[in-house]
Amino acid sequence: MKIVVTHMSPDWDAITSVWLIKKYLSGWQEADVQFVPAGQRWHNAKLQQENIDQNNPIEKIGDDEVIHVDTGLGPLDHHQIRESNVCAASRTWDYVLAQFKEAKDHMTSEHKEAISRIVKIVVEIDHFGEVFWHDAASDIYEFSLLGVLEGFKYIKLGKDKEAYLFGVECLNAMVSEFENRIWAEREIKDKGIKFETRFGKGIGFETLNDTVLKLSQKMGYILVVRKDPRKGYVRIKTLPDHDGKKGIDLTSAYEQLRKMDPDATWFLHVSKKMLLNGTPKNPKMIPTKLTLREIIKVLERI
Image 1: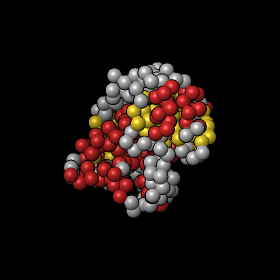
Image 2: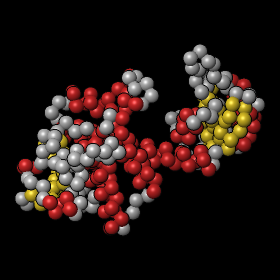
Image 3: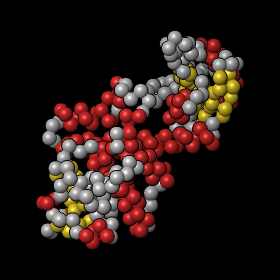
Image 4: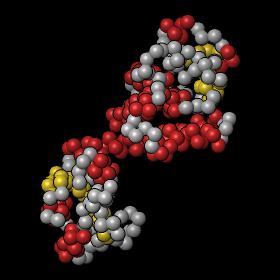
C-alpha cells in the first residue's frame, strides 16, 4: 500500500503537500492519507540515511511505500531547515516537478504557474508572514482561507481527514482561479485597448475572460469594459463610491448606448457604476451589435 503521512490538525503546508503528492506524483493518486503527532513518523520507523542522501522521500516501511510530508524530518519536511523561504509544500513541489521532468509528463505553463503561486503563499503563511500584510489585524483575513480553515478545524475538532479533504477542494478551486487570473494578466498586457476619460484611464477588452474587469480596476483603471466575442455581451464597470468620494455615474453612457442600439437589452445598475448588456444569468437579454471600439468612443466622452 502507498501511504502519505502528515501531522495531525493539518495546516495549509501539510494539506498542500499531501495534495501535491496525490494529485501530481504518478502512481500515488489512490494513496492512503494518515496523520501522526507533529514531528513523528509512521509507526515510529527510523528514517534511513540513504533516503536523505538520495533525496528520496519514498520509504519502505513494512510492506508499505510511505512518504512523510511536513513531519518526520525527511526530504519533504522542513523543520530541520532554518530558512524562511522553504516549507514542506515548496520542497514537495520541487520534488514533483523533478519527477514530471524525468517522466516527460506534460503540464501547461499556466497550470504550473498557478501552483507555484499557491506554494509561494503557503511558504509565506507557514512562517507567519501574514503578520506583515497590509492592515494585518483586519477582519478580512478571517474571511480568507487562513481563517476559514482554522474555524473548520475548530468545529470539526480531531477530524483531520475532513480538514484535509476540505483543503483539497479549496486548493483545486484555487488552481482554477489562479489560472484564470494568469490568463487575465496576459489579456490585460497584450490585448487591452487603453483609452482616456476626464476621470482617468480606462481599458477595454474583447475576451471570454471576465476576470479582466475586476483585476484591471485593482490595477488602477477607472473605467473598464469587456465584450464577449462569442455571445456579444458587454459589461461596463467603474469604481464604487468610497470614503465619501463619488465614482463615475454611467447614466449618460447608458442613455447614449440605448440610442445607438435600441434593440439591445441595456441594464443600468442602481448604483450607476455597472452597465450591463446581456448575461448568462438571463438568456432573454439581447446582446448589442455595437463594436467594442464604438462603445469605447462613448465612454471616452462621458
